Image (cartoon, rainbow, N blue to C red; front, side, top):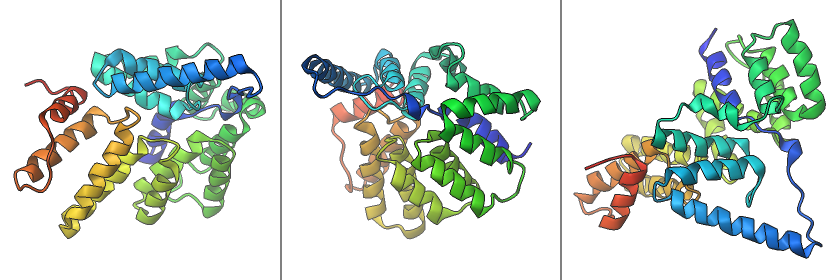
Length: 276
C-alpha cells in the first residue's frame, strides 16, 4: 500500500453527495424568511466559532452537512468537525456517526476501506446510481491507485467529476499534485477551489510562507496573513494555523513590520488552544 493510497483512504471522509442539495423556492415567502433566518443563524455561529467556541464548530458542521443557511458541503463540514474535535478531544472518527446508516458518506468509506474486493465493486455499481460524480472518481482512482504516476487521461476524468460536483475529485487533485510536487498544478487547484472551500486558503497562505523563506520578500508574509484571515472569516482557522499566525505576529512584530492588538492575540490563542 503506497503513500498515495493511504492519502486517499484518509480524505474519503471528505467526500460529499452533491446530488442532494436542498432547493430554495424563491416564490415562497415563508421559505424566504426561513432561509434568511438560517443564514443569520449561520453567521452568528461563525462569529461564536471565531472566538473558539467548541459547540459552535459542531453546530457549523451540522449546518454544512444539511445545507442549513449555507451551501451543503461535506468537505467544509469535516473542517468544522475537526476543529470541534481539537477543542474537545473527541475522536475524529466519530464523524461517521453524524450520518444515518446507508448514507452515501458511509457507503463510500466502506468501499475504499475494502481493498476493492468483489463486494465493493457491487456496492460501487449501486453508488453510481445515486452519486455518479463521486463513483466516477472512485473508479478512476481505484484502477490506478498503485501506479507511480496517474495518467493524464485519468486526471481528466477526475477533473470532469469535479465539474460535475464531486468534492472527492477536488481533494484528490490537491493531494495528488502535492504528493508529486507538481507545484503549478497544486497552486492552481488551491486557487480554483478556495472560494468554495475556504479552509484551502490556509494552504495558499502556507505556500506564501514557503516563498518567503526562499525570497525573503516580506510581501509574501503579508499575503500569507491575508489568506489566513480569508479562512478565518468562515471560522476555518484551525489551531495549527492560528498558532502559525501568532508566530508571524510575534516574529515580525519585534521588527515593527506587523502589529496585532491584545484582543486579537487573545482570540487567536483561544483558537490555537494556547493557555498562558
